[in-house]
Image 1 (cartoon, rainbow, N blue to C red):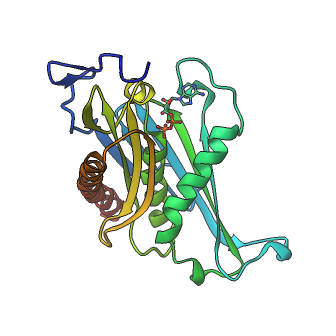
Image 2 (tube, rainbow, N blue to C red):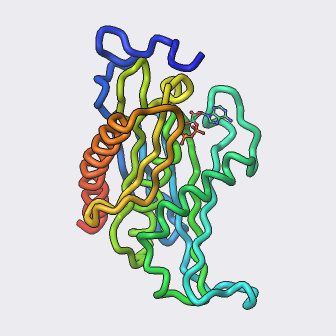
Length: 234
Ligand code: ADP
């Protein structure tokens, strides 16, 4: 039963982290030569690469809208998990593509590109929990590198409850055995939440605490994103 697996021993998680500690984070931009913008983000053993193409004119014409159409495709590579995952778009990847799109869209100035389309690809190279938030961070960096006008970067992380303890940045085993988990994204400088998904049972106090933990973590990740972008222009 969920919550029964011992995931915290003597105050430390199985990978040695304290409850509110992130895994090691790595961010790089311009990792895909043929994309207009791209980024690599690693949270511990979870690795996402995002590549952005466009904006380009949307054809056929009848599909055009009076604002930019953003298409997001999230996928997990067959070798990204322990047992080979069957390739192709399954129900989970269709859902996560929509989740990531909805997390990013509020930051993009869609009105600036009527009749155009922007394609965002998020590939999970290695999966160990929290892939949607790792992918969201990568996609947001890739959009910025593609020069897409944005109100702010989107920064994301996960928070959950394991062994009755609130923890930041769930890894795979924690995600699979959590009592509750939450995926969270925001535009940090606007203090605006763009994604808030939750699973499990939590009290109002726990939810408030988790939101505070997630937004504090996002502010730190935001500084790393900005540093990665600045590094590309040195
Ligand atoms: P997220 O990756 O955003 O946390 P999920 O809760 O759906 O989204 O997945 C949790 C974790 O479960 C993933 O990060 C990955 O480690 C693992 N996982 C998901 N799908 C598969 C799969 N088809 N095969 C093996 N592991 C998977």
